[in-house]
Image (cartoon, rainbow, N blue to C red; front, side, top):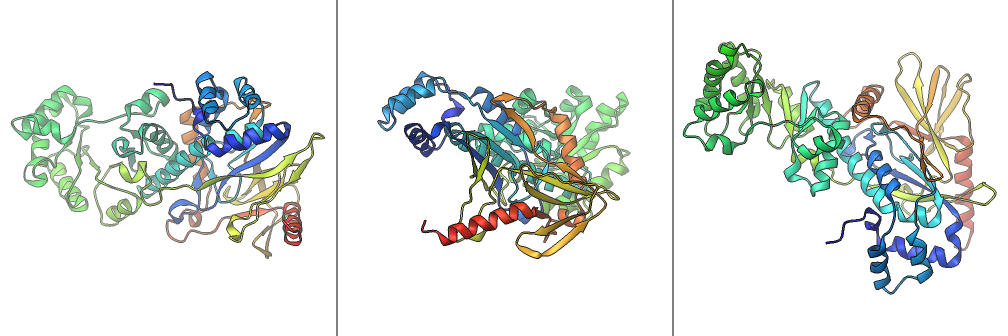
Length: 483
């Protein structure tokens, strides 16, 4: 079987357009695309950008081999000169992106690509795949972690993920979003996300008695004794046998750290009963782990009911983002760069107003309140605009231009970092631990109103006056043309 080449994970029309660009000479023309999304999953107030590290690896390795070219030739669609061009194909363009872990909002660029037309077109599908998937899972994970209110959250969804890569990179994205570890061993091996796990019901069923199963496990793993107590009857036997095993094996060794896991039944009720039984047995350091189709809403309900849970294991509803399984990122042409280096802005118009794009090669600034450090708004500017943060700055809602706000005591930060320059990687990638820490720090800089699960505050993503005027001018031109 042929080795899978990521360059071929591409919508077929990317190749037909690329062949067309080659035939008419457009392949030398540089195009500017923005990768952005339109709606936050689950009706939330923000999303978490993720997937950049895999995008970097994809761009670095981008090429076509002989088998790929032979396959394309077999379709009897493409010119021989174009196929010959693909033999030495490499990415030579420029890419900007927000660092992984950054809170992002609808309609602002997560990534901007400027490259010769064929290069810019052929990377669309795979970049969208990477950013859409990992941003979706990182966003869901962050919601779940915030719902847990400081308690440990583990990602346990590999067996329910949408394919092997979904399990592996999904667990990575969940870690960026704030999860503390994963059940996926391969994700630990590849990326260093801490993998953990103890036993399944099959372990307990394999022994003649529940107590023997627990005792044996404690003897083999005294420093990691997490016992699954709901195989038969949680209250009548499971918790009691776990307590007995802990007392018989761990306490004589001076080990007081242990845990039980609840995976079925009324988790809130059972956790409170378990906590009482453990405390009365002198096992106050024994933690209670809960799993079983959890998500942010169920976790909040459990805590509201006074559930005594220290660790949440979250599987299918996290790794598939079950309640909102599509991120909805898109890849749109926003400008053409001419030989003199100047950019000609382009706009897409639709009867659906939400699908009208913001034109031009852009930069994005984030404004922070000096007194609190909290994020106030983002502003999309034309690439050559510079904001003087020593002067008052007026921002406005592009959908309601009469709504303005003047900022006087603020700092600003450009969000887009340069990743590739002329096809060469110029970005110093942070470690995964640094990315996770950065994500949690940046989320803390959002107001609580933006972080609400229900009816979050609408964080403003504004257009600069210059960009807004360009957009309006393009809309007027298209409205009056015969296109």
